[in-house]
Image (cartoon, rainbow, N blue to C red; front, side):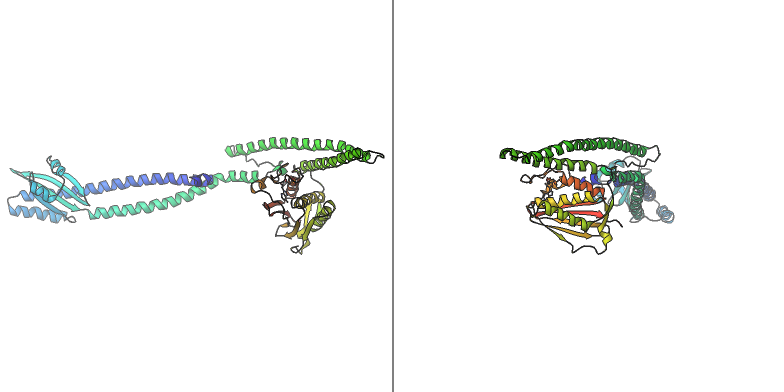
Amino acid sequence: MWYVSRMKIQNKIALIFTALCAGIILALSAFVYFFASESISASFFHRLEVRSDIVGHAALQENKSLTSIYYDIKERHLGSLPYEKHRILPDPPDEATRKRLSLPSSFYEAAQSDVPVRYFNRDTSYVVLRVARDNKKLMVVSSALDTYGMQEMGNLKHVLLIGFFIAMVFVFTFGKLFSNEIFKPIRRIIRNVKGINAHNLHQRLVVDPTDDDVEALSRTFNDMLDRLEITFEMQNNFVSNASHEFRTPLTIVSGEAELGMSMPGLPDGAKESFLNIYKEVGKLEHLTNSMLSLAQTGFDGKKEQWEEVRIDELILSVKEAADRIIPENQVAIDFDNLPEDECKLTVNGNLALLKAAFSNIVLNSCKYSDNKPVTVKISADSKYVIVDITDQGIGIPDREIGQIFVPFFRASNTAPYKGYGIGLPLTHNIIRMHQGKADVHSRVGEGTRFTTYLPYKYF
Ligand code: ADP
């Protein structure tokens, strides 16, 4: 049941169609088999009755030469049935005779009417009929085996079974082909919708003017995308404008704090207050700048300046920046797998954004490992330049890994470390802007590995 509910609709339709046809074909086959069997058995009983009648009338003859004429006619014109046997009994038969033949007593009772009675037991057909002449009454019990009829029924069974299986194969194959054909437009829609995300929200589904449900579905999707795009744009504009508006007052407060600190003759306490204001405003500035970048990179339409960027050089500059911010860091760059072809190291992108993206990952690795060794490995495959950043830090709890690219999310084990949960969402947006992807593998207490894939320029 679980499997059926997880199945593709196309396969479900093909299976339901096959099951329906199987039911109809089975019912039809049972019907054919039943009527063929009834008609074969009726005709056999009839042939047995004719022979039984001749035998009965022969037995009634006093004149032996007439008896042999009856038998002669029977043999010559009708022939014998397989295992044909006739028993002439007194009418009504006595108890001893009944016992000897071991036929149900209802059989004899029914035979009291003048209509021949038929009985079928263990492949053998029995007929009992009464014959009378002058004052003499006899009962004839005849039996025979319908071997020919049984063979016919056996053949019919085989033909019906083989026909059933062949029909099922055809029905399933055609069912699948049909459902495949019917679902083609739906699959196209699914493919197109999958390709639409926050970065290309302006894209729309191609609407075939077929005037059917598929057209209505495409139009509904497009309407929904219109609404989504407007909402996204509004949200981004809000974040972007708010961050922008914060910047000037923050710069002023920062400048004033700096000025305050440098005033001569300031009491120690006041100097420390100015220093605290300066530091905290610095953090706020960093936060607003990050939010502004997040808003700008999170939505298509605003393309920054694009240029050729060498990833190895970029990583070196990230390392330099890390050395300035955290002098005690142990970041090491592993060039062992560097591709020889420099084209495989060059991506088309925005230098400042890419630098921000990799700095976020590298600085996180230093931060969450308390400056234990961090390795940055650069390599390439047939399409991407790959950067692996591995640390030996606190790791990310399994069930939270899926959320680390969500803005403002911080894992439950990060309480001792300062942060806002903006760096990785920004990094993710930047990588996606460059048609790349990012993977995270992490184990709590062992460390984390971020792998980024960026398509190189000449791919
Ligand atoms: P934060 O300012 O909190 O570091 P980020 O957006 O940079 O925000 O990261 C989001 C969350 O991802 C972090 O709060 C942390 O839980 C987790 N994280 C990121 N990098 C690492 C890492 N190298 N090791 C462990 N956890 C990490």
